[in-house]
Image 1 (tube, rainbow, N blue to C red):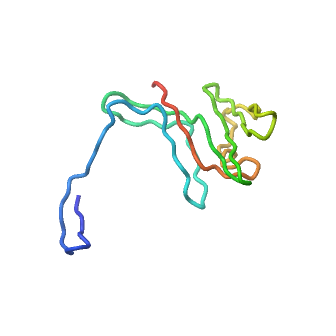
Image 2: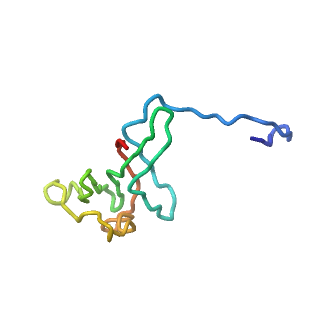
Image 3: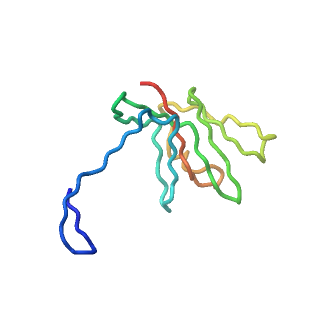
Length: 124
């Protein structure tokens, strides 16, 4: 890797820093900080030194209207909407994910924009 130093204006070489956690974390989250929506993947797979690691999308947090709502996706691939101000604070079944499901429907719920994608560690 070659790095151009903005301080001394010389070219330096550097080794990329690669670090691994001894065990994969049980959850990963990604905060969406762009104006453009980012489509989530249902599954993420990483190469980890001790084992291949897979994560499944398990929740999406939405923000809008001065409060948060959440889309829950348990292992059954059913989609549940949680809004503490609706249905007595109980999640509401929306639909199941199947081959006909359009992921773009997860980008927003009732005018609220997806803010955080949460993934849960699964075994391959």
